[in-house]
Length: 247
Length: 247
DNA sequence: AGTCGCCCGACAGGAAAACGACAGGCCGGC
DNA sequence: GCCGGCCTGTCGTTTTCCTGTCGGGCGACT
Picture 1 (cartoon, each protein chain N blue to C red):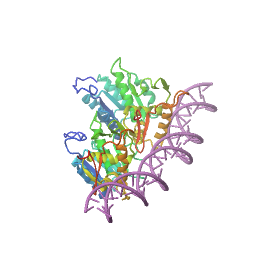
Picture 2 (spheres, each protein chain N blue to C red):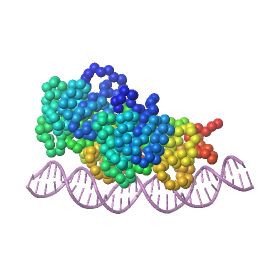
Picture 3 (cartoon, rainbow over the protein chains, first blue to last red):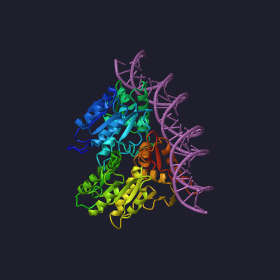
């Protein structure tokens, strides 16, 4: 935290600087790419040594750190990072049935962890949350808003006007992605790739299905009045967008 | 708390300044990090010397002091602190079967102590209490309130409406954490990490269990009427939140 | 009018949460 | 110092409800 440069904040003026540490280059690149696409600066390291060097050099605002590294293990990296006085927040990656238990305690300081394989949008969401929290006191709520639809990321409360919707985890994630990118049109492949775990096999019509379920929940209204203005638009042959219908 | 430092309105008048003294860097950092996320300013010292230097320099409002230090021991630090005229309240950390009895005598002046390993939420709670008490006479009670649920942190009295609940220590801690963060949704990992001692292994379903027991106590009503409005909500696939049910 | 893409009902498998029952440990009373 | 009760966490079962597959139908674009 204490470099002369203003502290990272959510949606701040300066670009967030992210260091990704994973010995599997495809994974590291995946994360880095997504982050860059969000407008962040990202660099990757494939070993603990390199990570420590880059941490000193690049001075990231946040670190994504795989616990399974060839040389120093993730905890070792964390130790040496902290010992060198850096307070950078860290989000860990761990294999499913790996060190999950040893990971206990990581959310305590405000850091967080995620199990592999993860969904990129979820990772980004957690990174944003951690950044927001570390930005200091009275960090403000993160509320997404599109037309009369609101999503509070802290309470996970989603409302269409006054009415509160109850969404399943998948529906929530898809909707968040749509809201965050609104009014952009997203292909089904993009949605699938961002919201589902990487490596998800089912190249099926899951996305269509979830969108369908979402629509029902978004547009249903009091029994008397009928359907509210539909917010999720189909762009035939391409994908979906969340926005008011064009007139 | 009193150095005439001007501060923005809103938030408490000034940021609390915390000095953490522990020769084990991970522990010191843990405490410092949690405090920062609460909006405090925190610095750490890993030796008695450094602690004394920082005490004069940083002028903390409160000190967390481990009694097992390499150079000067905790008592020595305390002595020299007091001799230099500071009245800063101190919360001591001691090993389980350590000098617990000798510490007891020290907790007079509004100071307090905690046995290692501790739970971060409990430490923060004690720090807040000590601060509140040291703020002088006529300090106000700390009462948490969510819907018709109240928790008096001084008397440890918890009420649902008129009815007084009797909670076990663990239940009390979990509920306090939920109330303090209400209406935010907390993951089970967060609850586990904040309410249980660091180093607690059990990655089991303890949290679910305690929540289940809490619910029974919160929602039970007079024999005639049946269950009150449930206040602890499950957010499937994510965690729990304490708040009024959605309409 | 035909074709292709999308929508969505129905269903099954499975994951997550709730909770009853039990055992070990701690503490307080005697 | 011994006994008993309460608290805590583990295990395993039950319940809930989420998710993805299949396939028929329908609407849109050509």
